[in-house]
Amino acid sequence: MSKAANTRLTILQKAFELIYTKGYQTTSIDEIIATTQVTKGAFYYHFKTKDEMGVAIIEEILKPTMQEHFIKPTEASQNPIEDFYNMISYLLLEDPFLQVKYGCPVGNLTQEMTPWNNKFSEALTELVNLWKETIIKSIEKGKESGLIRKDVVGEQVAFFILSGYWGIRNFGKLQNDNSSYFVYLKELRSYLDNLK
Amino acid sequence: MSKAANTRLTILQKAFELIYTKGYQTTSIDEIIATTQVTKGAFYYHFKTKDEMGVAIIEEILKPTMQEHFIKPTEASQNPIEDFYNMISYLLLEDPFLQVKYGCPVGNLTQEMTPWNNKFSEALTELVNLWKETIIKSIEKGKESGLIRKDVVGEQVAFFILSGYWGIRNFGKLQNDNSSYFVYLKELRSYLDNLK
DNA sequence: GCTTTTTCATACTAATCAGTATTTTTTATG
DNA sequence: CATAAAAAATACTGATTAGTATGAAAAAGC
Image (cartoon, rainbow over all chains, first blue to last red; front, side, top):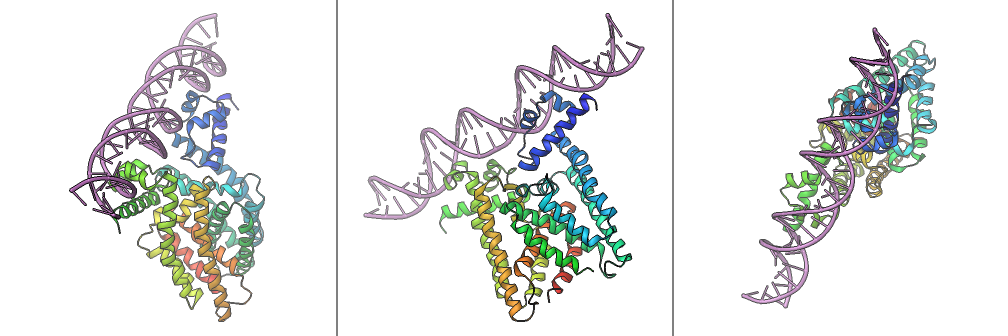
């Protein structure tokens, strides 16, 4: 990777960490360049505005991460119900990057930037739809293989699972501990089992 | 109500509307006093800081509203399952104040202010716990009256319902339309029916 | 090695922010 | 009505904000 490309990536990564922990609006460019040891000239060479950088974070940091960690595993799944549970459980309790007190990065950005910034909304919608569609496909596969009831509606379940995930992360954030996750996961288990 | 008390209430109400639509951090005091036609002197006579006003909004605007619209009806309910559905459905589709594109006020504040402001977190936690406990009690009542299965765990269901609500409001916000609400409500219906 | 383009560094600006100091007006109370 | 206290009005401050203007260094092309 060229030195310039490296500078750009460093900015995106460090800025993402700051934004994930502090929020977008309250993370200033001065703070970003201070922690990245990059000058303002370099920053504005790579990004025309702060918002352009924000969208780049979604597309160049969040999207690939999601592809790798959610989309691929779900597509490869032979047992949707078991793997949905494992996916959510992993995200809530084990993922090394996500932290209880900071919630879900995609959820945070959605809450904060929608509906005031169209570029953000579009980029985030793309992400979320990708995840949703993957879940729906996985459910259809499960229906074919007999692991899921035929009368289950994929889109409904996808919305239900993702909503619950976003919501419980907000609870975790509020309480700043794992306890609500354990309670939530038990009910998720019983909900998912009812799809069989 | 005294004139001073009226000034205070006006500030809280208008500020809440601004914060609900724009977010807390991006709503400036200058903007609040401009829309309320109140001077800065008056504002800072009633509130020592912006954050003190924020907490007052939670306690004096959000809390009473929640008491009236969620707590009381749930406590009076004779048929929990039916009324849970109606409550969520009302909130998503009919409530005259809440708007799809702006999400849930409590959820928004939680996302934005936690974990960086303890006073906010405490005030919000109180609100949410109140709602949660009311739902749990309602479920226990339903179990006694035979409307809900005995093996249903109230706390799990309460978390599940509230998480789903918070999450789907984030979806609505992202898409800026009702469509996801309809899909979500269908699955909520079938989830709730499984508690019978 | 010379030139051009890319990449980055420094110093600045105008706007906005939360909050303060001080004075004036309004209201309550005797 | 006089006085004290409560409530509100005005003008300011210092810090922070996103973004710019301009020039210097690095890298690439020949």
